[in-house]
Image: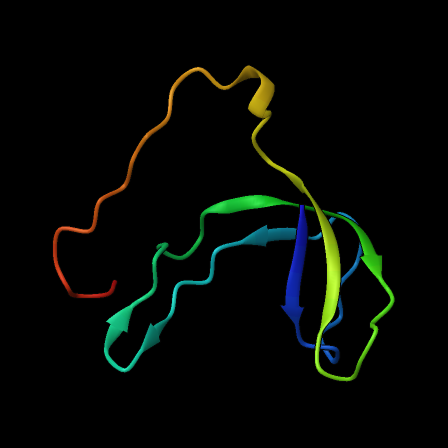
Length: 80
């Protein structure tokens, strides 16, 4: 997977864990709660501009072996 919108001043190394951060914009909660493991940085790509960098991420889940999926539903408007 390719992850964009990485700040060019952020130090990213191979094998770093990528997790959801959770956020709030104008009082609205982000889509995903914080702390969910997404994957591991497999490679950093040289920035093509001064605004964002890109990294390649190896997913934590082995999608070829996935049999069940848990769906998270937000039941309230409060962020944790």
